[in-house]
Length: 497
Image (cartoon, rainbow, N blue to C red; front, side):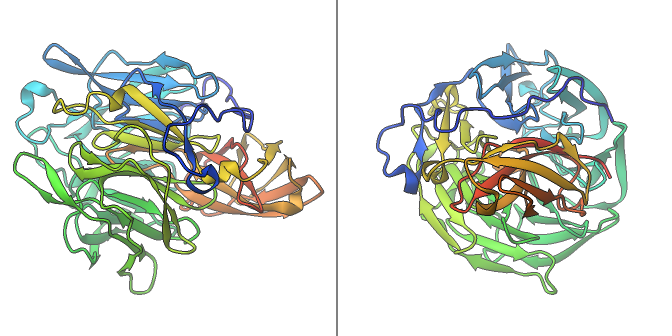
């Protein structure tokens, strides 16, 4: 595996309390509903988003050049507000799959074959690429065995990347999986095959198996040796959810939840009849089955979910009719402990098809994207909006120092805290770096750490021994006080076992 080419930028991103810029209009008490900053001009439409180990955010999009499509990419620095053009100058990675490697580099698999071949939903391409966030350079890894458009990619416990689904050169769904090895070799997975629709919602479980929860209603498991799929149960909704969101439920190991999505797709590709329903499955229970959870206040498809440091989940954007009709401007905050939703302050622009939302290392949420394919949504993609969740308005933030740059599994790491006493620390958590597109985030995961105060301002936290819970790579480490107020994250790498 390639080693990072220069040191990480660590430490505080912003002075706590100093980043609350002029808010958008029509907002209530920020300690209850959060606050949006005024929209910021954005150089490209954020169709793909990844939070990098440099604490920056990359956005990818398509760039039309005559009759061809090429990739435009930018890296945004939240400390300075500056953008850096990192467009590769080759290929089209639009609607590819992506994930963060153990090295901190971004792996991008597949993409789009071009407008002149747009005779169906999309034709895939075979090339796979890697972006180095430390040097801002791209390189080609090679070609996959199959072209893929709309695949899902995510990390396994041994550092390999699993590539599933996607559409091939002739619009067919690809049933064969592939992996990217640690030495950057693309390998076809022999044995299991399963047709899955666009961007399969799949998650690595703590026992090493993979659960596929949608968009289809049938729930299936892939064994940890990647040898076979087994169908186990069916959702309560009992039908496809187009463009839903799915996420690990913080605080509940191996619980996965799926919310929203459109229930009807028309021949022209438009979708409507969204649902507000949510369902959860305890994937490693003796008899796994779906159970209905509290519904969202608003039915919506084309939505993104963001796991927050306090263990709540923010659902952003979406709307009533794919692609851009009747956007839902008010996010909702889900509390897994009480199974309740709270409606948040509204953002300015609709965030529906081809939008993204990610957790920043300073605890805020960046909402961006939504393109203008049918000419009815010309403005959204030109702006980014930043949301400060309610926890940023509930007192002083802890400040964390002395976190090591990396750690081994089953090790103990020291740290120092300021602005709070070690005895007042409520939790220490790792949150995976986001890699999100088309309402699915394959990177975010929530890993609580056991911790022990060792002094008035010092404590130790224990890194999990289970790489299935936290695959090797980079994480944001947050310390929260007893009021649920998070520190600015320190970025730490968990080493390969």
